[in-house]
Image (cartoon, rainbow, N blue to C red; front, side):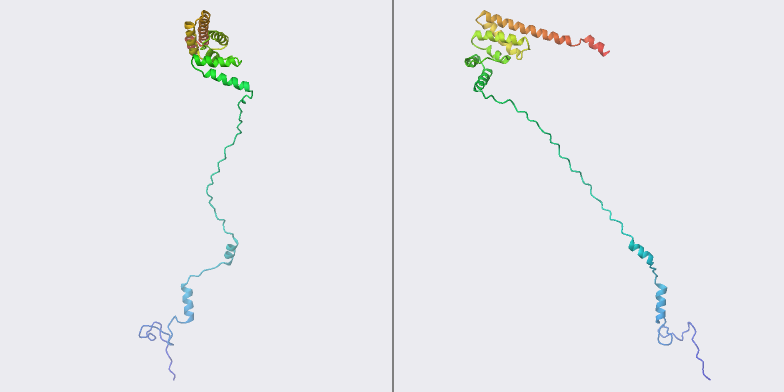
Length: 226
């Protein structure tokens, strides 16, 4: 009668080797079979599901445009507007030789100082046949001439000019007229200088009165303030 081979129970020590390893009786350890390895990997590894639609969608969606941060550019300053400058030419110098001579001699008369120099400059000016212009500065110089006849002419010319305008150099004119009134040899010259000086004083007093009439009084200013 054939003996029936008993299958060892699970967990028995029949198939356990001395070193504690278990085998299936054929020299193979448990878990060495290909099926067991695949089962091990499938059991412990994480599955990754790749959706083909999602992949297609990602490939068709364009990447967002890169944001470029531009540096602040300072506007270039506008160049100042160039305005056209109009140059006004001065008076042309005289080309007439006689006029050039007159201007040269007249400048000498105005620049001269002292009775000798003034008398010499005036005599040379008159010698060339020129006449003094109707200005206060020219005839004021002639008051210093050594010839009293020319001094009398200067007093008469200044009287005509000062009837229209105020004196430009009042202190100088007053001083020269007082000296002529005291030191002149001819009485007519002294009288002419005295009359012109009185005329200047009267003219100055009339001008002061006119300015005072235009200025409001203190009472009127107080009434206006109220």
